[in-house]
Amino acid sequence: MTPLLPLFLLLLALNASAETIELFPDGAPGEENQTIGEEAWMPLDKPDADPAITRLGNVSQPRIDIFPAEGDGLKPAVLICPGGGYYILAMNHEGTMVADWLNELGYTAIVLTYRVPRREGREPHAAPLEDARRAMELIHANAETWEIDRDQIGVLGFSAGGNLAAHLAYGVETKDLPAHLRPDFAILVYPALLKKDTTDTLNPAFVVTENSPPCFLVHAHNDRGGAHVNGSALFYLALSKREVPAELHIFSDGKHGFGMLERGQPIHSWPSRCEEWLAHLLNHE
Image 1 (cartoon, rainbow, N blue to C red):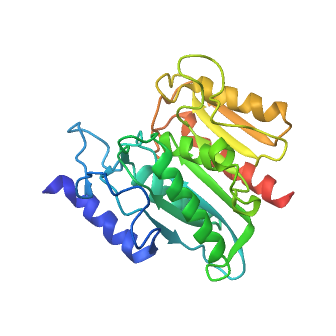
Image 2 (tube, rainbow, N blue to C red; image 1 turned 120 degrees about the vertical axis):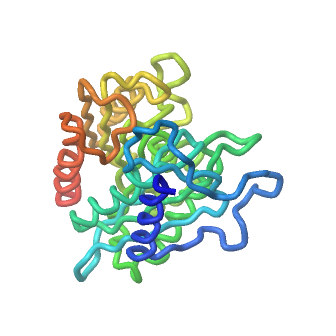
């Protein structure tokens, strides 16, 4: 029972700090023929795993948790998409810890718990993208109540969540999304699947135009898996070609999945670099 204690405390903290809203109270679309197990925290594979890393699986009821920033007046907001390969959700170091950081900066944070694992017969990002789109609709619809500036709503994602954030902000499948519902900026942290297969060409699922939102990217040079560092480099070049405001940070070491952890490496300074970028971006729009 001891390994589950941090998860229990995390749930208590989440319930005490955030308002939870189901995205589809009557059931998420396309779930009729899916056989997904009961939602549960998944044990970590390694006995010496970092207790800050938690894994939530079998999500069939997507939702958002709103962590409001303190103070009066309208604030910027960020929709947070944890990673996990579209199989699980790394809810702490890529979710609630991010919300805490953004709150400290004066941003309202919204953590998206999207559907996992991958749905049979659908693209890995398909169901999560429906969830992210619905989340953006709710954020805009409740902006006045939640004291959110409708012109400063961004998206931040890690790994598969970075892929999801990219689909929301730059995806071909979201071209029909009304302009006011598209993210005003995107933060992609070791985003996955930005390049096409094993080639060094951008995934055609993404289209960058002169009107695309500004983007901040961070990656480790030695991240060589499905979230290959070259994907972020290619994405930055596409943004640069269209003169979309962008910033790319590639650190020599860090591999994959560092999130909001602090392990004494230079790459763990990325939140400070992102804070500077956001301050410049939002103060000069």
